[in-house]
Amino acid sequence: MPTDATALVELKQRHMIPCLYHFYRRPPVIVRGEMQYLFDAAGRRYLDAYAGVTVMNAGHCNPAITEPAIAQIRTLQHTTTIYLAEPLYRLAERLTAFIGGGLDRVFFVNSGSEANEGALLLSRLYTGRPGFIHLNGGLHGRTALTMGLTGLEMWRTDPFPPPHLYRAPRPHCAQCELSQTFGSCGYACVEAVRALLRQHGDIAALIAEPIQGNGGIIVPPDGYFERLRDVLHEAGALLVFDEVQCGFGRTGRRFAFQHTGIEPDILTVAKALGNGFPIAAFCTRAAIAAAYTKPGASTTGGNPVAAAAALAVLQYHESQRLAERAAELGGNLRSRFAAMARGRPCIAEVRGRGLMLGLELAVAGTPLPALTDWVLEEMKDRGFLIGKTGRGRNVLTFMPPLVVTREDLDALCTALDEVLRRVGPDGAVPGQG
Image (tube, rainbow, N blue to C red; front, side, top):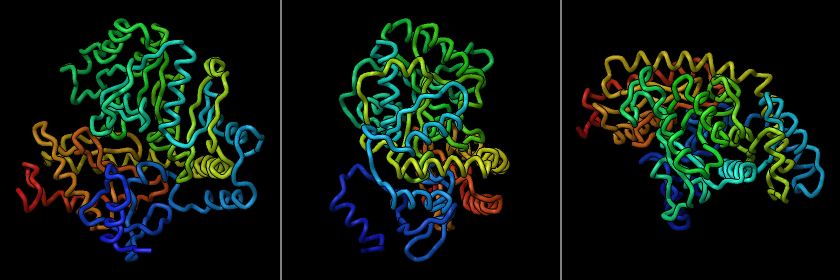
């Protein structure tokens, strides 16, 4: 099999649908993973500071997770929910306990898109209404409905979105879409949702990420979700939290909603639940789950192998206290980024929680996507793989495996500081300004 990047790109162009893109002008060929590190075909080691888009929270090829999955493969690889098999139900018990609170009913599927689709279906069944509200800048999946509820234009591929979908402003105070100032705004973004609820009497739920991931690591202000939940419940609508990216310790708590004072009506999880194995779920309270009685199934959702892996993931999170680790390491990393931003006009904002952090590159409000790409390439050449997000694709994004060390992050900061020293105050790409 070819391991040369040129040969693989040729195969990709010849056989893959052209919507699939990859990072880097000079992409490495990744052949092996080991906890927080990835290795390319030439044997070079990289610190994975993106965790496969926050999938590998417990580390690449972690034997504490892969070995139970391998043992399960040798015993029972597949059944469906028309039969009884223990891993699925043990996982349901363990996952609901891991979440805590009143979310004690679960439906397992394969992906975050499916989990969000299922949560939205459940909202319709419970309320008897067809409509949904979503936030500008959100990303909720690749199915027709979840794509229609995505507030990032680059991910809204379908030219014919479904009806009954309504978009509200996102709560990003530093760049308020309603030209308000936090503290005197009266939560105008929540009032915009109230106005939609009054205008459209068909709203089943609002779906939101507690911290927007692909939208650029956007953290809503304190009190936002508490007020939003109250406004929704007054109108008989539900609140769905999409924690496909920000769940499982990423933000310094087991789930990002735990930074607020509320619990969602429905919670969706995926990615880090399987730590590389495909599994996802939507979780809710018994009273809401009771609305879903017509037959439902997912042929491979929660299959024995993925369930065994997920059980091992939850055990590892608890034993290694990964959420607490993310809070400590993330607090230090954010402080380092804040110091790095001082005196650098090209860093417009540092934001995030735990080990879900973003540095927005912009000057005078103008996004700098070319500079973002250049920084990614330079950091890759120094052995660090980071991400990019944001509506302008101009937010450097840092979401490493939660097993990363302080020494790893110090080395990342040293390299990033060296790269940014080459950038002038206008944010022009070095050598092209």
